[in-house]
View 1 (cartoon, rainbow, N blue to C red):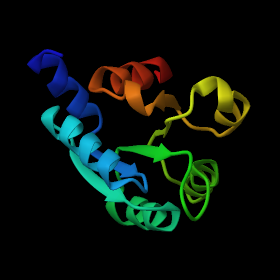
View 2: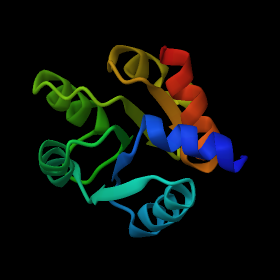
View 3: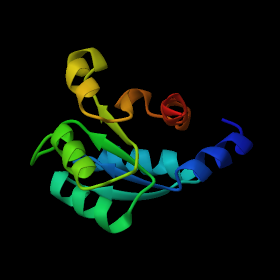
Length: 130
């Protein structure tokens, strides 16, 4: 990704909240996103993620589908019901085909498999919403 494009991506979503219970994935996502100019905040489970979303008011939320205390689908519903305006991108190690109906019904901006997470996949997902 070129530096110019990275800056336009970061301008669209300056703060990203990553809600995931796996520390290694959060660390990997943080490195990837910070290299592209994003500010990253983290939530370690659903309850923590909701608190961070309310407190930090991120521009974008990356939300794991499988959390220890709830599902990403439930967190997405609660955030949307609470008035969160940030686009929510669901993430999982499971393929989209396994979750298709739930993803479609979740109100999330979309879904990215964790192995495919990149600044360009995020940009593509957000661009398709416009």
